[in-house]
Length: 176
Image (cartoon, rainbow, N blue to C red):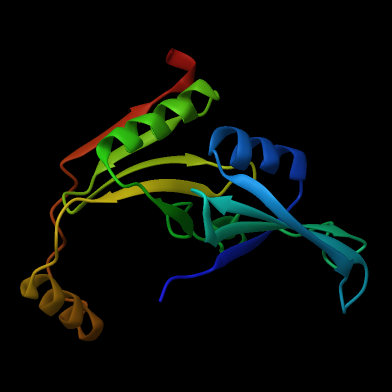
């Protein structure tokens, strides 16, 4: 079962819209506007991903909602962990799409981190909320040994570290 939507708070909906529709290519298709039970009111914006009417990312623009003025929209910063811990990863169907996504981010003036994790290939940047956003392509299938190691990791902290990524490259928008 896949998720239907991921919803997060936003401080600057104009910047969120410019990024998720303009740069990411997602389409704003719906807004719900109404009161919040704890007080105030909000707009809930839904962006359709890749033309799929069952996959969305959504953002809350809050008005007079308790805590709305001070909410930390960077998920990792709010949790007190490094940026890569809490991030949003979107599927990429092939390497050509990965290249298009990377170039769109660079053209928008965003820095891009590119990593070949061996089992998947990823490009990363940050959205206007400060969240790390990823496009990821799974490169192969998983073996029974992969599952056995994952199950063993549930019970043990003594397993050897995984092999480092095959490639890590930083692309600076400023150097374009």
